[in-house]
Image (cartoon, rainbow, N blue to C red; front, side, top):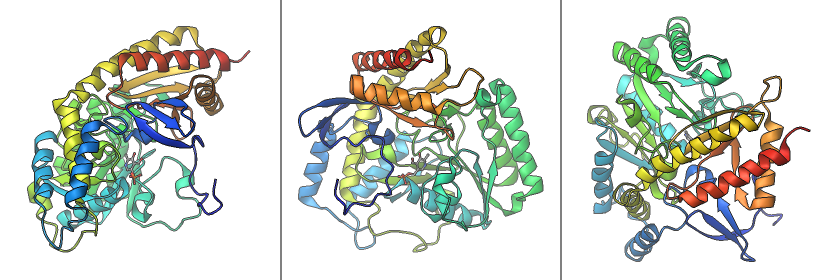
Length: 420
Ligand SMILES: Cc1ncc(COP(=O)(O)O)c(C=O)c1O
């Protein structure tokens, strides 16, 4: 590795990969690895899907930077029209940016303008990015904020309903978390001062936990009563990851704002927020923007990605492969101590590990990830505040045989890492 490269990036592996296609990445010497990280839930259509590559190549020959303030390339509106088709009802205008953190910044700036209120509520164990405001909204681990204080003010934290961790059922977790949210609104941030509740309907970095339906419905009811905006951060759980185009589609609840990034353009840096038109129109012209937002190559990659997800059936595949995966993983639980919980929606699946006395077992997860890499050439990552969850986030085009291959590697790792 070059001494000229910053050392700040945490690395899951130091594999010198040079190419990838589908669910496989290759190093310079031709060694292949089955990639169940998807570059952190990004390569929704797999690495270098031919339709996405063709769209990028074609667009690059015609226009690389058609800056949105200077002129309007029709592809910018074409993507907005397509997004309006595939996002939840009521989300009908779109703003483009380049990363999930930028989507967070944009969503909060819009919510503040639209409501003329200052404060934002986020969830415990949330991850919304690493820029200053997004960092203040990220509560999944102290590493993201230690040394960077003081953080921007006006952020209040409510508990996310974590049934497994709390040792209760979904209904109880939802009721408890809703009561805490109501308490926050009378004790710390008055509704009249609260612009938005920002939440990941399926918690990502914080542990791959789908919020119970009663919780999402309860948050919607609180927002309707108070005028607070419901902002769904679907940066990780959106774009087919959960087996529906958006996680909110599972709940039948409309968000006021929707944040998108990661899977949106199969790895080309691109992000967007969507909102109801009456909200988006309260954003004063010129009060937000960016040099690169709406880049035409990104728009082309996003349009091709949506075609693969919707028209070619990758979202439906995510639902079917997710069921296959969860069934196979649950079948391992009776014979493998420590595999305390298996949960998931579509291809956003968690396997959570605890020690014999019920404590989070991050060491076991690290050992399993290392074993799968070394003995089976299968790439996994962890998540969760305590690092004791191995998360499953393969490309949405993964085959049934690739799921079997990864589960077999995992099963062998369970045996190899079991306490004597
Ligand atoms: C739910 C969620 N929101 C926001 C972000 C930040 O995205 P980015 O890393 O593109 O800034 C992430 C990244 O993991 C995420 O999972």
